Length: 354
Image (cartoon, rainbow, N blue to C red):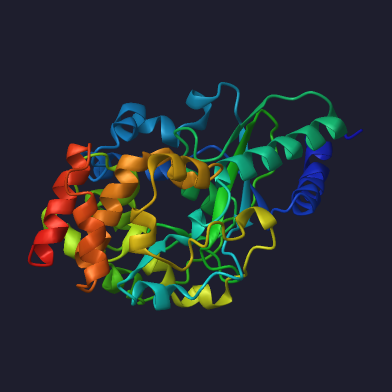
């Protein structure tokens, strides 16, 4: 049993790293809870309306930057990182450049990461409790108002790239983050230096120009937001730029030079399911609601629902090369029961001269 005093807690951190690695995490760091340096940027982002329809971002406000307001008694945050890119997935640019195929963000090809990380974080917390006795904590995996990139930066797990994602010199950005808010006064790690330099590839490659300035993302233009978070019609002016990206967008990560050092995930949880790394738009558009529910069970994609999934596919088909197969697939759903889907199907058919 490790004593929960200052000396014991200092010794505890290396043990937490070892236990985390044994549980499948690729890196563990510790941050303090002083995120005041990030508050001005967060407020400016919200005031600019860059959160779009994500009203919860504004509703929670500065609670994201004040961990002790989210979980009373929090004095430290354990931040965990886990790689997700499946080694066997088809090369992303090859799919994106083939207009007949559907591109799904690589993080969503396998099992829902919320479930994967939450379970492992809970087991890590249980292991800590076994070593020191009961302690106060809460586990988060993109499930609460947590400023996770800033926490990970302070925990020494990387630096914030110009695309706003966390970057690591040895792992790129193909990883998930999870947190344990705790009342243990753990010694924090030191942040690492930034290494983006003058590079602006992530900004230049963005199809919809969503990265409006270094470290500043307008979610309203971001394809990940438009295809996942946004519930209504996708703005017509942005639809052509979405191409065949039907769930999320990885372009800024694909263009980042640091991702040449990224390591694929070794976890079976993140292995490709349902052939989503290399499947045609037409095939996916033919799925029935029941088929969508069945195939997407356990997937992060399921939460957007069949209607939004169909909307995204209709946009992809509108951008696809004209062919009898594409036209036929769209015609079948011209009178879809969903007004949202009908509107996007009509737009897609008009793109093909119908």
